[in-house]
Length: 279
Length: 225
Image 1 (tube, chains in turn blue, orange):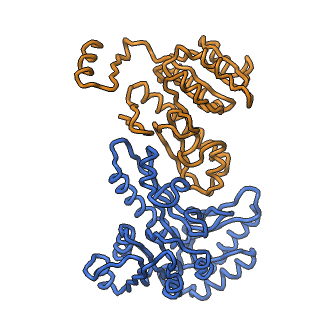
Image 2 (tube, one colour; image 1 turned 90 degrees about the horizontal axis):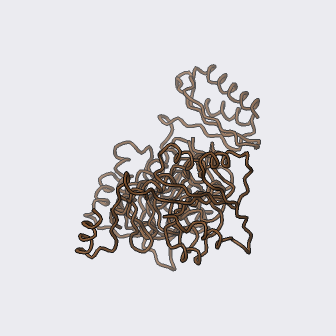
Image 3 (cartoon, chains in turn blue, yellow; image 1 turned 60 degrees about the horizontal axis):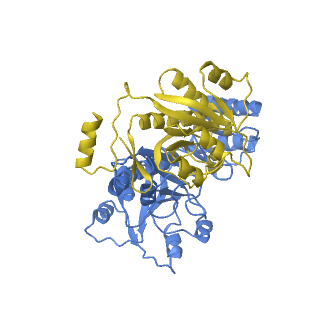
């Protein structure tokens, strides 16, 4: 495995050198006792000397050489941004934080639309923001019987991944299969503690001294998919349920933003059954 | 001083009033219970020796047999602390004998003692018992929380020190600590990080308790000043 790895790195370096590239950093992870490895490299190059299409061919060749399960090449400045749709319910702190980050250029995605099962009037901050920025807002009311999944699927066809920013509906296995791409969710609790609803209240009643937030990939099982990032903050007897919620909301915003950023930088890779490698 | 504060506490109908002068009053007498895993026990003993643990360790009780040439036994002998090996089985948890041994303690410390304490014991002992759980409660209750955490793919692991109640790993939490883990961690490093957290978390809880900073609060919580 070590030899294969070194050959990979050497091959990459040879390609880079021959095309006038320069490696900035490389991250490699070899799971113990497994015959696979994960590799991520960052490099700079001269687009005149190394055409984008040529780069794809070069790395495709390397990936075939190593029988790679998956190989992704991305040039943030040249390639189209990731297209995402954001789905939210009534709680909008995460949604608003995402929108502001996006506006500030800190969120390297293309927000194609916002979908919500909560009706927002035209004079609300969110709707006015979206209008000003040309992002459609879709109100899709949900009931126990109808989760509007078909309509959501239609709307998100041309996205690269979805972000559930405190969307309080469960997505069915059928939806997940039909969509087929990654969905990142923020859970306002430190999984696997406090799955389901009102984790802040659960945490408050449990008398914990630390509360947290977890961002993870959505799977069929509620709040159980591969974890991408977790963050905590201390709480004490001086906290009431309001401050629990406030601290939690702050954590959710940071944790979700971090997960999306890592994902867009191609740092998040599925690992084993239900885990992730995050370079 | 005691009289003065007693009068004040009566004036305010205090549920509880404690006055303590660490330099004058006798140290808290404790007994430490442990099983085979001894990292917490050893850390407590060393802290105590260094004067960082302001208690009087009256005895160590364990359901794991330790030989005379083990570090723990030699340390206890050098320091005049008796070691009691009480083998436990499914049928016999030796609780009567433990109760006899801990009669004159102020509180107990379970330093990775892997036996359940029955409610009968709790009723008869009646004083506080501090436990260290090698997981971030309420996640991963019960056994092998490091393995549970590893399999769950969490990015943070922790330890929790809490008061023992009838329900396993569910008593009022005193202190919690976390550390980051990643894909680079294997089960061994999970355990190592966990052991380090357990030692710190238990020591912190005992210290807070001895400084009278920990007060029961509502049903299942604590005020920790």
